[in-house]
Length: 404
Image (cartoon, rainbow, N blue to C red; front, side):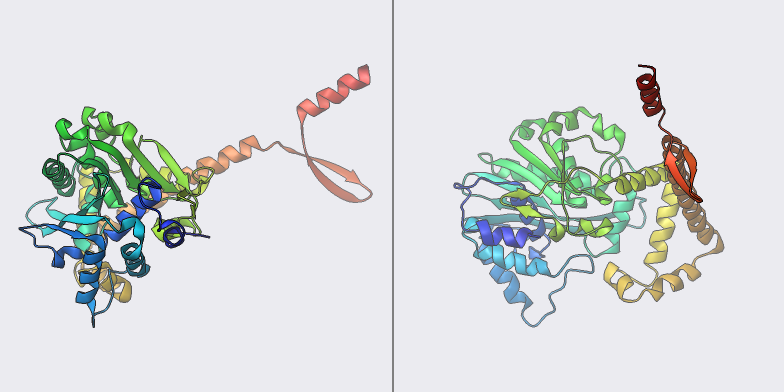
């Protein structure tokens, strides 16, 4: 069960001239982008640093401090970063335009903003613009939920402006754009909305198990111009990557984990210079997607917004990060009890709808399976009962043989 770490051991000695940029390199860069390099880059002057030097400066600053990126980011990210920094494959890679934005404007319904990006410059005059997924802050999760309410969210619009800024700053470079989870969503949106004059320089867009978009976005001419250059990479039991809607080319890969744990990029299986292919999305994942979409369609926009605001208020009563919630789960119950009665009713009502929609979707599947299963025929032989399945076509064939 080999993963990205094994890929670096196998092929980290090959330059991009010997083995061109591939889908595993895309995921490596998306993963490295979770490192919080903002402290070592001047936010005004910017500048460029070799990837190896940026990594060294980052770990020098961490001396004596806990290596921790939140409850959802596995600590093996630090090991991978050090391995990338020492690999000849990334020896000439430079990092620039490191950006992190976090805002919490309580006066606006979509005032929560969280996104981060960095740009890799390669020796062949191509770049990879990596968007980080949702971080440990609850602000970021609130904006993720807002994607189910608003046609666009602030991070998407700011990400498009960032891509345009970088492409204009490096006019002789061609670009690949990507990210994991929410970062993949920002990559697709920014590639579509960065402006047609720079859009032609985009070689590929990678959405690594990234949530989708409203149907209206998929019909937008800006997106349609870039659609064939988008690659959606999903594990075979994906949940996050099946949220909302995608219509870009899809690649389904194997994971050594099950269900939501497949969202962890370190569980994706690698063979040579690509991810190992799976046969397709599992039936269980497709059923779950259908149930969630039915639940969302059963809510008005106002109900969605009220539900999200209430849940966010509950989560932030006694915590600011996902880590705080995971480490002290009792805070959730206390926060729920502190809500007003009508707010608790909002949460109970939406969860009741989710259960009802899920029950209906799974009930339809079970009903369909019963209709497809042929009725059993009972035979009695020597005091025992044998159950077989009735096969009309087989009986017809036997009758023809008897006549002949």
